[in-house]
Image (cartoon, rainbow, N blue to C red; front, side, top):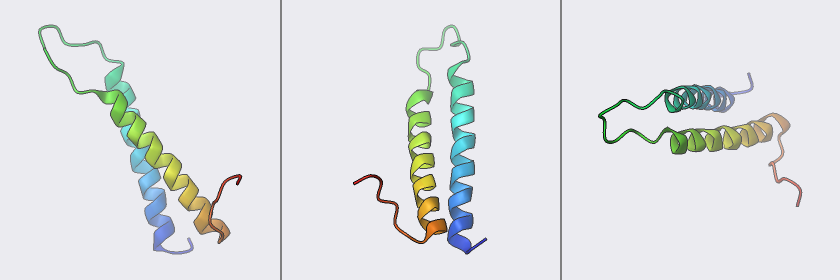
Length: 72
């Protein structure tokens, strides 16, 4: 590995992927009868996917040495 920043970025990607997996699993479970409120798992999955995308862009920047600017 290049440095600790790369290791931290990879850790963020793995943890976010785990959060997405748990959120999708819990979202697909049938609702409990008699329970009035349940945790909204889809927004949590969306935030975790956004974190993965940002971490991947950061990883490209770390590995290439140039800032990831997209197609401007």
